[in-house]
Length: 211
Image 1 (cartoon, rainbow, N blue to C red):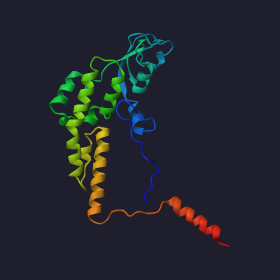
Image 2 (image 1 turned 60 degrees about the horizontal axis):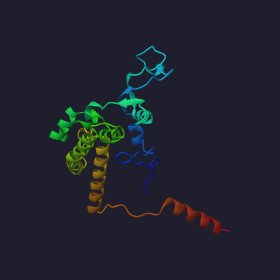
Image 3 (image 1 turned 135 degrees about the vertical axis):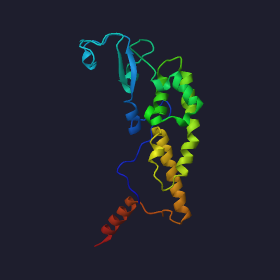
Image 4 (image 1 turned 90 degrees about the vertical axis):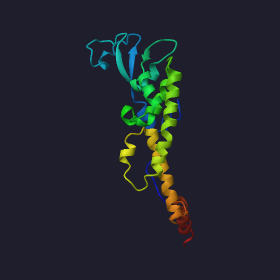
C-alpha cells in the first residue's frame, strides 16, 4: 500500500479559500498594488521607502492579499486596491485573442486564484475580470489536457513551466489518469491490499490469543 507523509489538501474554488491548502496559503501572500485611504499612525517602519513615523494617506505600496482583504471595507475606506497589470484591459485583450500563447506562470503563478480573489474588491471592471479569467481557463483547458495525455513517459518540463498552478494540477491529474489506464491495459493494475490498520489489529488479536 502506498503511504504519504503528507496528503495534499486541494485549494478552494472560486472566491472561497481553504486555509489548510498550501496553495491557498501561498496565494494569500501574493502582493497587490494598493493605496492607503487614511493615515496609519506609528506604522511608518513598514514602508521602507519613507522615513516618516506614520504611513500617510495616499501612500502607494504593495500588500499581501490576506492583508489587503483584511483592511478593505466598503463602508469605511481604509485601503484601495489597484488591478495587477495582467488583469487590466490591455492584457485582457491579449487573452481574448489567444490565451494559449501567454506564459501564465511568468505573468503570475496563481492567475486563476488571484483573479477570483480580486472580485472581493469593488471595481467597475469586476465583470470583465471574471469573464476574462473564465474564458482564459476554457481556452487553455483542452490544450493542457491534450498535452498531459500525449506526453506519456516524456520530459514535460517545457510544457509545464508555462502553466498556472491550477493548470499544473490538472496536468498532473491527466498524466496520473493516463498512467493508471496504461497499467490497467498491461495488466499491472494495483491489487487491493488490506489496510495497515487491519493488519496491525490482526497481529494484536493473535498476540492476545497466544498463551
